[in-house]
Image 1 (cartoon, rainbow, N blue to C red):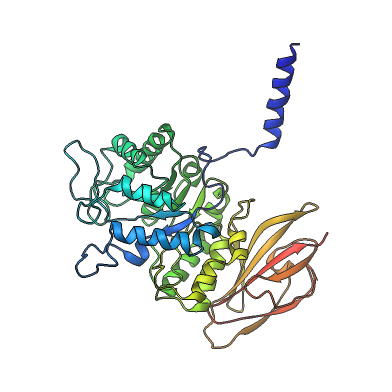
Image 2 (image 1 turned 90 degrees about the vertical axis):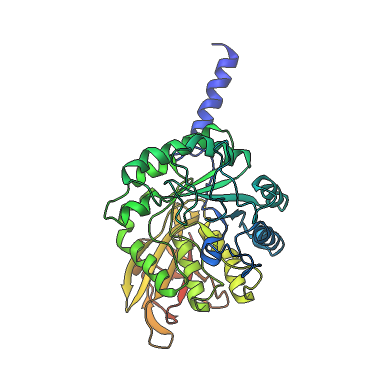
Length: 416
């Protein structure tokens, strides 16, 4: 046999053994949950720049947010995508049928803004809508899929969120598939976020998450998060109820998206903010901050930049965690993570209090009680590293105290 053929066979076999297999959208992106910032929850569709000169959806706002993402430690922590949501558009396409930004609020155009965002070391994300009009009434993409994909490529975007307002359920599958195909055929690496599942799930129709993983990098399952603890727990409870249907389809390149982080705004207490960050880490959720970087308090900023929580969220195993049980109105959640020691995975374990009785409620727990089957583990309190726990076999009982609507977030690492 020819020597070159032997070498080729050896190299091919090595690649097949050593490289991870891609089971979802094969664009090489979002191998861990995307991290970044998105405008919607904090800035909504503010377009009155006279009344809100510093907060309206405009070139000025996004350049400022890019400056603060880059200089404020967020980019260094892994938050790399700056994503503009709805209301950036002009109400009319160009005479050539192309999308265009509002000329007064984006006087330099989108390519110029993209260049500025890229100059800060960030990646640029944008919003559009599959239907005839966006949720706020701006032009959608439904009859312009190919030309709009080319426009976004020409603007050098790195991430696109496609919403699902004002469209027929019957059109979603083909439309989202075709648009993703146009993006992939362009040769530009663009993370593709699909909102299609929410628009059918809220009508009682179960989404095909296996198929979504083949065409999208992430997808919204449920309704928009609002600036309140009630909204946050509504999303958490929906994930608890339906986790068996879609949790198994999350993994490198394809993620369930419970929506933005609202930490640092008005609706969450400090303890509730830690709860959202911990549970989004357990759920392997995209970490898309929606806050005004000019006004966020240092305590909330520290939550968003917590290296240990981010490491759990970004764990390379890519396994979405799950709710295990409720103990005295305290929900226990578990996620397998690295390191793997002698075949035993480590675990992130979150205890989220649904109580409101005014003090840190004590419960006795063991690792076996939350579904861990074997081994002895060292236990670290992720938010409170000074809190010491003895090494624990799975049946060893220890006490934790969980504040009302707060969380105790543990990491258990096998000792052998």
